[in-house]
Image 1: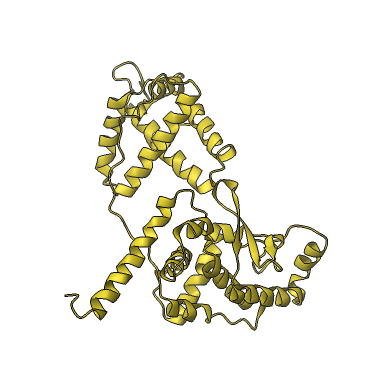
Image 2: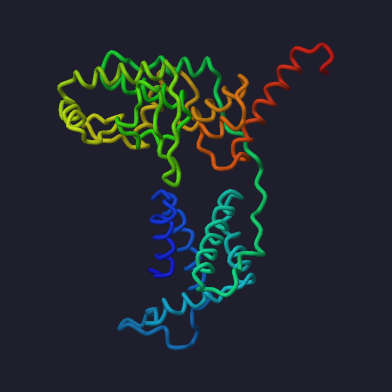
Length: 333
């Protein structure tokens, strides 16, 4: 059922909050499930909602006011209704993380309605998010990173691109979505930095290590000299915005393409196939903290709004210190 009130909320997420299309789709899916629950709750029984077809089998027809009816149910929802919906979700045996997301969706939805005066009271104020087991982010060792970065053949244009991509992910800790959004104009060679557009369209400047900068320059030199990508060079020379990392057709790479390339090099290098582009981001943060970087600096480099989000990496460094202590101290155990 297409709900105008839900569509208004999703438009707000995309246009005003600048949520990614993927995140907005997840919120939309959660609210569709909520709509289905309310539809079942408000389904009339014995009121002529079912008609008979010529064959005698019942045909369920939604009354013309169905959308208005469900909208009214959403607006009139109280804490008891929300709890019934959460109890309904129990049958699907969702993980605590998924349940937390669905609750967060409803919390944002009703906050939106309350701010616009569409509901008198927010039914989510008394709903708590279930506690989740803390999962430490996965990181790989410096040696494993080196092994991965050396795998692409940078004697060919696309191989040089792949080497530059991996070097950039590890050197800057950017999200893969931020990496594929980079334009060539976002590279400052003299300043040895990249301008990153992060979540909520917020910009930050991240430094590039010498290895990553050299890999990018090598890739761009090969790209500009490759006749297959002549149009990309022409557009850049004419002042048009062009992707920093192009696909084989000269267009913008997708996040999925980066993941597929990484899978290829993980297999070639014999590394754990579950390593993802986000693993390189985790490794970036962990290795910085291991070598004495302060938490605030790492927070800014990662583009985290809250310091608590970055603090999860301190558990990894503390864990490593404990392991080193247990192995080295004569009276550790």
